[in-house]
Length: 380
Image (tube, rainbow, N blue to C red; front, side, top):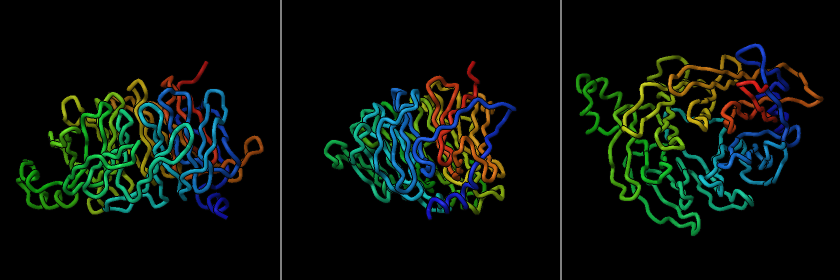
């Protein structure tokens, strides 16, 4: 019944793919059975293996995307809405983060379940229930976790908490730089800091609203836990922090509190960028309108930025020039009721995950019970 419920509610069975431009260079790939839905994608650091997570009891796959071959299949996770997935820096571990069909509890801190598995065997390593955030350290020695106000370093070999520190009023997000030297943490705006912000000093009403609805990001020394500085910017409710692979940029995904939305759309989200060479926010940023926390990634050469969004009806993948912020390519996942392709039912889900491939000219993305390889720069 679960599969048929998904078909009726989320999918509308079968679809026509289209996007910006008249012709699309893409391939549709079915990894498992016709009724197996995929929820998350991650590309191994050596670019050889695509990790693919499913929903509910659907299997977890390790897939040779170049030769279109399933390498291994595991039964892990088993979360109703599926999981987001992420490789550790050297590819030895995989982090699964539970996805929910009701992804946002508006205006509240969010707690999720996480699991870490051995990337080669699928064996269970460690589980974290009701945590705000979990990240790998660059040397793969630790899982950095945020639970309540406490950031902990969990040794992945001993499974023990080796060290920890607290950040008062921490919210949903923690991130550690690739070199392991810096930790970024989102937290509520502190009154003593708000009093130093000139635009708030002049307006008591703005001060009150900022203290209630805005957050900030502070950067800590990962060795001493000393706070180095707070980024000079006010953010909305922060759901995710992540460093770029070279550590030069920090991405912040946030959504405004419902009471201060500038539009009637409660799903308007922002991905802001902090220049970590200066510690200052960059002027450019990116937006998304999505039903769920949107997947976003920087291409391997650092030139392109991809983010999941949607139009009035369909899920879309937007690809921008990272430096200018100009949208270059757009892929729209649309459908036709009961349409089939090669005698296979094509079923839509309401979430999308994607990865840039190493050529920086193509991506792989989830689409219901299929994977799509889209060459946004068409192959000869």
